[in-house]
Length: 152
Ligand SMILES: CC(C)(COP(=O)(O)OP(=O)(O)OC[C@H]1O[C@@H](n2cnc3c(N)ncnc32)[C@H](O)[C@@H]1OP(=O)(O)O)[C@@H](O)C(=O)NCCC(=O)NCCS
Image (cartoon, rainbow, N blue to C red; front, top):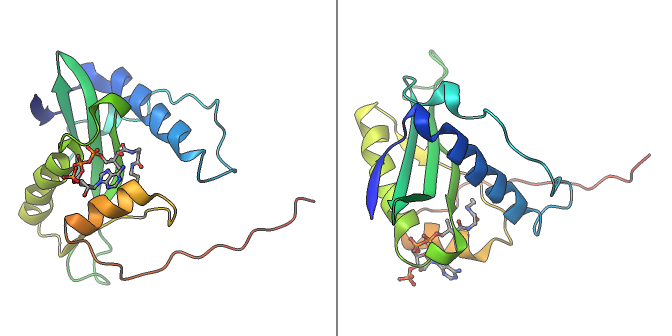
């Protein structure tokens, strides 16, 4: 197992894993298109200041990734907030601590860039992710509420 920063050579594989993350979330969100394929989402953000793309290789293959970035509103926010935007581990590599290790590696990026906290959104029915974040001492501080509307 090897945890490292992504390089532009990894961009296509990261798009594939983000595609799988979206497909995985279809079980929780009927508004997601289960045939959507991500292309060129991460290439421009790899190595870009304020953005962090971390990945885990296992057996020479990238099997997990995390993408996060700094959210800043100068003048309004005293300190930036580190947003954990995407986290995905391939099915056959789950429960090996990979997501936990990716989050541990994201934390110093957030701290070194002066962030006051890490924030993320998680679907209330995503039990695996909720258990992961609870185990890592994330606390619920906001509720993200929705109201379904009838299609016209
Ligand atoms: C959620 C996800 C990222 C967890 O990745 P992972 O590498 O398996 O997580 P870890 O091995 O670091 O798990 C750490 C702890 O989280 C909890 N956990 C993780 N998956 C769990 C599950 N399916 N059920 C219950 N608890 C779980 C456990 O407490 C686990 O510790 P343990 O294995 O010692 O019991 C992975 O299941 C995944 O990629 N899911 C699909 C995408 C997704 O939901 N991403 C998050 C969107 S917010």
